[in-house]
Length: 101
Image 1: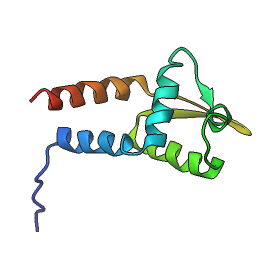
Image 2: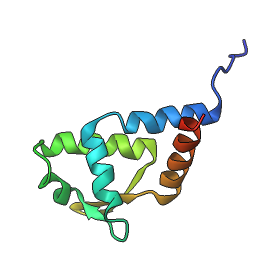
Image 3: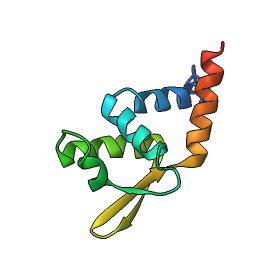
């Protein structure tokens, strides 16, 4: 049986990016990384700025990676994170286009 698709690919992407923006910690992380676009940051740098457990920070970073807004580079035992510029630009464009309707 063929499954009917109700949502466009654009709508699904907007929802995925919207979910990434749906928690203040994730907004903080994105803001922190966006203000450091010329370099990547270690999760420990962000942990020092936030009053949350490192495990909680890790879960939020995982959600942002899942949405494609950030990317991580592992240099054991550290992980550097930075904005995924391609998806960041796509999210800005899609959300701006959506809100302009």
